[in-house]
Amino acid sequence: MRGLIYACGWLAIIILGAIAAFLIHNSVRAIQEAGIGTMLSTTAWYPTSSPGKFGLLPLIVGSLYVTGVALLVSVPVGVGAAVFISEFSGRRVKDVMKTIIEFMAAVPSVVYGLIGVAVLIPLVKDIFALDSGMTALTGGVVLGIMSIPTVITISEDALHAVPADLRRGSAALGNTRWQTTYKVTLPAAGSGIFAASMLGLGRAIGETMAVLMLTGNAAVMPASVLESVRTMTGTIAAEMGEVVQGGLHYSVLFAVGLVLFIITFAINLAADLVLERQRKRWRR
Amino acid sequence: MVIPMQLSADGGAVITAVRDAEYTAEVTGGAIGSFSLTDVSVAYGRDRVIEGVTMDVPAHAVTALIGPSGCGKSTLLRCLNRMNDELGNVHVGGRITLDGQDIMGKAMDPVELRMRVGQVFQRPNPFPMSIFDNVAYGPRTQGIRSRTELSDLVEATLRSSALWDEVKNSLKKHAFELSGGQQQRLCIARALATRPEVILMDEPASALDPISTQQIEDTIAALKSSVTIVIVTHNMQQAARISDKTAFMLRESLEAPAFLVEMGDTKRMFTNPEDTRTESYITGRFG
Image 1: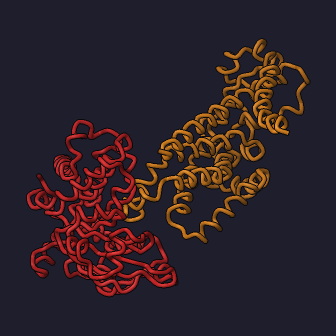
Image 2: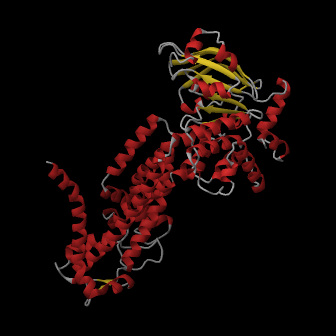
């Protein structure tokens, strides 16, 4: 029985290692034939021409544009909501808000995508007078809304972890609740809020369905967020069904997956390290 | 020793709170920082925890609040700077005046009151910032921006709390790097920096070792010439050592609210108490 529990514990690590190994194994052909340097530095993505051109840069930049916009939406709104819930709302409002946020996180991403198609695409098209409303901005805004629950939850935890004594100390020095929040509580929770932003970013960069529906999926270098982009996740999802198993294109898609894996792994690791440092700080 | 009140006289910036205090001081006869409590009661929701406390807290003296755990000493202390407002669902009745001015009415802004009545907490609670910024926190809230003025104030208050010599070369160090005793003296300096008339201390030495406790007590003794001190303590010897007046509170059962048994000069309270319950408590028969 004890062995079984141990095995379950180790399983998570084994699965993670296996995913990495699997991605690397399947990317080998791409790395050898298309070349890492070429893939990461060229901008032409024509996987079906012959010979195929596999420049990943438009996809990486596409992902960065979309997640950048997402971050601009999710961090201010998420942190603001967390401050409201943690510092200004009563217990009843807090409970209701937390439940609603859990619901928000549970809505399938394809539903967010549908709403984006119905509402945001025409809106972006009209506001910026574009030919098409399918842009990095559209996808980014929806992704930002989707990652708000993550940002709120982790930021709220960080604010909650700030000792009540600090708030009282500030109040006892003649500070209003708002002054206390921005002068003491927010800075004290700073690293946790940074981690929350990072985890929100991780959520956004890995999201597939909504961006596939909203960004237009043109695999060209975008000049601004008002152009159509194709993200790394979108590329894998859209093209995987059409490739020859074991072929070069197939392998390149795994290489895209590997890049994505490394980026999200690094983001999550950074966030975890920051959170751990914050935890240590308040334990003393 | 440089004391904050002197500094306010020649320090340049005139703080509204201090000016008001000087004005009321004329009315009350010179002494700044005296409380008068009349029939004060406190209820948490429906639970009446304190009732009928009437007492005078003299200016420029140390008043100790003693009594067994749960007798409402800290709650009463928090009435004096309206920190009970922060807890929610707390109702305070009766009348409390500071230098003759009602502090419970709508006319008194709790934010302004707390600049006049500082507080030091049971556990040291320095802010996560540098030593300098901790002390300058209150003055900055009051709108003092001048770097030299802030430095002078920080030095003066750190001297008053007997911490200056230990930290004068490391003011930029993070406050969390200080020891517990140093942190508590930093918190005293921080409370002094708004140039209050009164400092409330809620068992300020209970989390500290004997040497740090001694330093805090020395600091209190040095401060009382310039500021009124009200201290809650569990430690009889401490109350006897440092206070001028002692008030003994008691809550005899959970059904009945706590009340003030008696209050008087510390010397008399500890040698010749009027009430037998006071005598039992200070001789260690209960609590």
